[in-house]
Image (cartoon, rainbow, N blue to C red; front, side, top):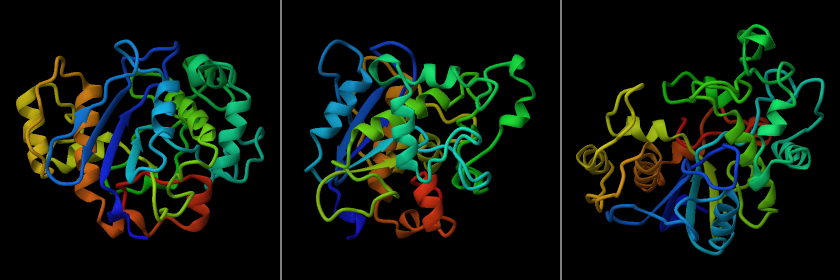
Length: 285
């Protein structure tokens, strides 16, 4: 089945923050064609919960929608032969998702407690944990060397750029999908219905000509310029131009723009073993 059967595209800027409501979550959708992507309002209040995102996603299971989440779908495995060496014997990413979910007590699918309980062993949260370089291990797609991959590792849990807590919270969500929605590349592209992929919003930003380190869009004119590069009509004005909102809007348009590129679905370095244990970021060739 070719991926160009998708007629809707959703990009979700994710959050691993504590609590039950998250201003850092944004959901943007667009349909096939050139219409501008739009933000999806949370079902209650002014901010999404992670559980509401899960419920929204499950409601799309029969729709031809490609859904991108901005978090790492697994921890590195290939380089050291384990996701959490000395602790886990998980042989694939799905086993890791179940392991994380069973050992996380955070509300709203949170995983901060999972990460913090393993600081200094698997995760770096500060100088007291030892030398940071000892924690820097990456997945194959994160060290692919094409200039579009994530600069951070899920084992680095400190600083504004860290992806650790968001990624392990996201693994709890992936586990809760319970086979209802396929997740690429762990599953093949289905003949019908929704599919979930891992995205990195900076890849979309760079496709519009924005430079590394300057990939955030914070005004309407800049957003329209980026959307134009992705074959999209101008956006409807936003109440606030947050990084989360503009990242989601731009990435939804990018997904629509590149979905038919076969190289993104069959990257050369993504062997079956890599796909099963670590997954891959859609957009890394």
